[in-house]
Length: 206
Ligand code: MG
Image (cartoon, rainbow, N blue to C red; front, side, top):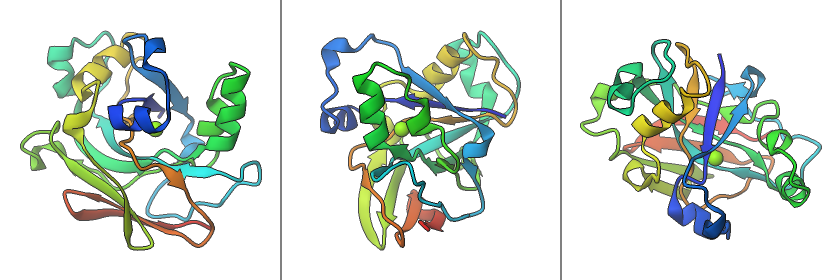
């Protein structure tokens, strides 16, 4: 399986990162994480030694349910039937250094354990997948709050776009971008992520 991720998909997060919209190409920013990035069943995240500024990015995650490529946007809804929530851990200090040199983000995004994900729930549980509330609490305090209606690129478009380049396979995961409120985590923190008020993820930084 592979993990695909879309960056800069919520305007208020782009604003907080001071990314320049004039450089915006009109297409999603895409990166990948290997299967070794995956953390399941609330496994703890071990703070890596190569960074002093690991940031949380809470994101709605879509699980692909059947193989497809060149999927038309109007048929994209047939290619996923479950939704979950995950953290796109980012080594912000390393990412800044890589960006400065115009290098790829990979090292700062795709490292071991950089993709904790929850269990998945059927998308039919939601009346509209583009109107789902989600949030991240750290040590009981809400740090990020979002709604999928605020996505710049909607889920069906993302699936269609990605499938032009990558054959999507059953079990592949797509991280759909983070709303504002990203920030650093530290050893000892407890992260809890919620979809529509229901706790989906609960793990510790070690
Ligand atoms: Mg992200």
